[in-house]
Length: 223
Image (cartoon, rainbow, N blue to C red; front, side, top):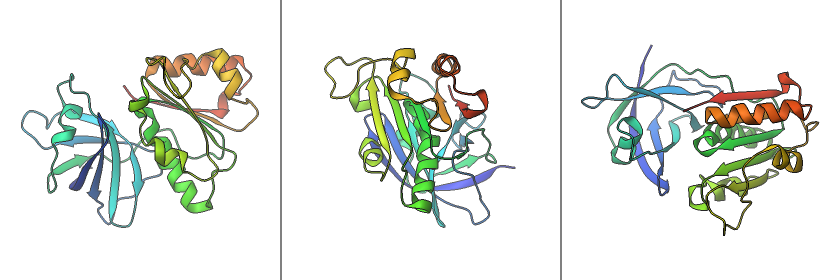
């Protein structure tokens, strides 16, 4: 069953990422970390759905942070042009990532969105994220989505790394085996991983080699 949402606000977060706030239908429920398939009700796009994860939900609103790819024709290219009052269609929620307790969150680019949902919900519920660490990889510092928000989350330890900017004020390494051995404790609870397929494949392999049990590795894959 599809659900229609009305856009209330569309604000830039970074140079290529936008924060979209929609009116939440009364009957809509979602578990933090789950995704929906979104379709724009525009000519030529009604048959193209893309997966996005709400980052927050209130009694009245459903919020997304979506990365735009100007070089790709389709849904994400149109995100910056969506205006208040426009409607989109979403699917029923789906997805494998959900909150299984404090641990290490490893994200690449837009893969941060399910973690924003989980961390926001837990912070609201418990008042602290003590015992949790976020490792977040991007190309450059300006690509880091919601950096100030993440750094301000009580109890959350953050490790940012960039791969295409040598003079950055954060780590400048790929998340390889050596990086994980420095920043990820295999005994520190579940490890959540979300990002491009190749990144997930590599990181999961490293984690298993480091002794993290397979049932403690929680993944979600987005293109």
